[in-house]
Each structure stands twice: as structure tokens, then as C-alpha cells.
Image 1 (cartoon, helix red, strand yellow):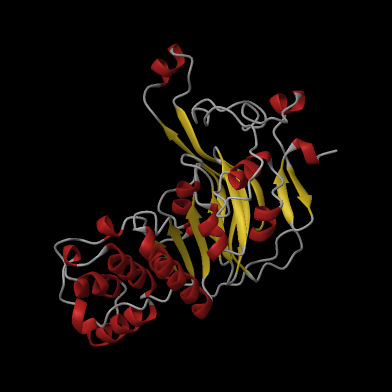
Image 2 (image 1 turned 180 degrees about the horizontal axis):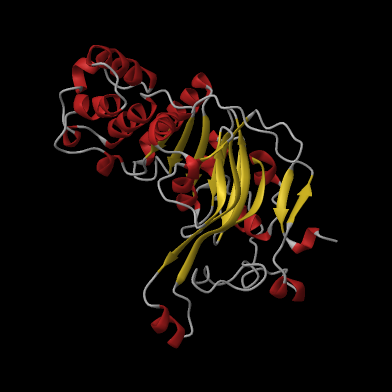
Length: 339
């Protein structure tokens, strides 16, 4: 599975791509169709609805948006933890929907998840040694080689020495120490692709910087391709060179992180940037006058899904879904740029 050369698509060379998502959607049935119809609603939640992007080898990409935008579902789709309703996801040139058997086991070694909550990611009945040995055992690594790999993984994430922690249980460790263990477990099989689902959101502010530094250093040292899922633009800016902004199941902007931060194009991206606190009292952001909360994902607005909250919405926004528009190094889904 690892090392498969991506085939030519539309006459282009895609050998540097690790992941390609094409029109990916994930819909969930919620409740009865009959009851939903009687209430004037849909029973279908479109968590992800027509998302397309590519990830190049060694690239670190932030998946940014407020709660309910579909970013975590997108991460699970990329790792083949849930099947897509439609669309396709290619990993190193192969459609993940066709992967099974030995190829699926190889894919699981190559694509790993760093969990959001370290307190729930580890079995409380297993020691740290047992938790780290479990993926090695599942992958068929000989017992004699496991301790060496465990020690290497712990050193990689700057964990306390193995002699101090391997026989401990999760409840005997701090949140920051546990998150390093969770990262070590994700990296112990030497993956090429990692999805980090808000890995510092459950930690004290005082230890977040250390974990983010480890994540960034490990990614650069190993040349990992990474998706960093977050609602916090400041964190994404710190660890990712590219940012994909999602809103209500769809991508609204995709481009270099610094450009998105300093000159956001989509009105929703602008709202996210202006929401970030400014450290200096003499500085201020001009707040974007969006109103209301995110719509019900079962009944999204027609046309542009952000139109109900957008101060720049006009008639076309209600009847036509925005298409991707190229603006320099960025792609934006907004009628304002489609002249």
C-alpha cells in the first residue's frame, strides 16, 4: 500500500500527492423521515457535503471552522474510519474504498490519528507499556523489537524516560504527559500521514505550547503529511503552512495560512480572523457584522450556506451555490469574486 504511485489524472502528474479528496460527502440519518417531514425538516444531516482538496507530501494543513462545520467528520473520512456517502478519497493514488485485507492493514500503519482527549484515548486498565505495545502487536512486530520502538517513540515526543513511566497507569500521569503518550502511540508505526484532532483542546494553557512544539518538530523531522483540526486560528497558524476553512460541511477558502490570516477573502474567514483577541490594547480589529448562529445542518440555506449571516449577501447567493474561484495562491468559494 505504501509507496503506490498516484496515476495521472486529467493529464497531470500527482506523484507528490498523499491524499486527494474529490466531492466527498458524509450524510447521517437522524430520526424518522416521516416525523421530520411533518415538522418541515429533513432527517438527513449533511456533515460533509461535496469537499475537494489535495494534500502534498510533507505538507501540514489546518482544517479550521466552528463546531459543527464538519472538520472532525472530514478527518475520520480521510482515515477510513467512516465510509463516505459519495465522492472518493485517494491515498497515495488508490481509492480507500477499495482497500481491504493486507492493504487495509498497511493503510492503518501509514495513516494514524492523534486523539483530542488523552484522558479517554488510553485504556485505564493498561500500563503505558501495554498501551504502546498494542499497535505493535496488532501490526505483527516481533516481541523482541517492541521495547526499542517504544523507547524511540517516547524519545521522539520528549516524554519522561521509559524507566519512569512505562509501568504507570494513565491516571498516574498529567494531561500533558498523556498527550505525549498518545502522540507516541500514533507515531510508533512510523506513519506517513497523521490527523491531529484538536490535540491540545483538553489541556491547560500552560502545557499547550510544549505539545504544539513537539507536534511541529516531529512533523518536520519525519516529513509527515498532517491535517491539524481546530477551531482556533492562532494554533493553526503556529503549526500549519496552509489552511482550509470549512463552514456547514463545505470548504469556503483554501490557501497559505499567512495569507488567510492577514488578508482573508471569504466573509466567514474574515469573521474568524476578527474574532481572534488582539494582545495589544492600542490595536483592534474591525469586527465583521455577521449575525445569528450556524443554521441547522438538516436544513442548510439554499445557494451559499453562509448567506443568512453574510453582510455582503445579494440575490445570486440565495439561488446559486458558489463555485471555486482561484485568487492567486488561494481558492475561495464566494460570488463576490466571480465577476
